[in-house]
Image (cartoon, rainbow, N blue to C red; front, side):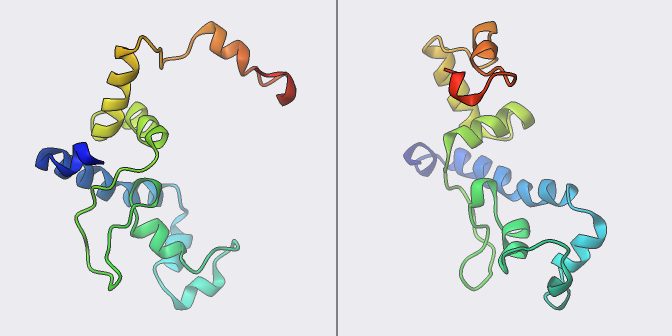
Length: 135
């Protein structure tokens, strides 16, 4: 977090990344559900059990729940760093839009740790084996 806090360019990149997340979430939600999510009155007819916070979670939070608004609902500049594994996964899927994920990849590579999977890795997570036998 300090690396981001001390660097205005990183703050801007993190904000851009976090602000892009709600649109991605919304792409996976059926159109008729979006209409319900966007209307408090219609939330009662939402087809799945949800938390009353579902609209805020979907529409107003960045990666791993970083808030994009203050308590009054006003937009904020979001640059919080949470869950390095989530930032890494986001970077591996979306690329350079996630600067923390990029730093994690660089850190792993600098230590000689592969992040692209190996034959041994695949053997350790063989989905055909019971979980207790995976090691």
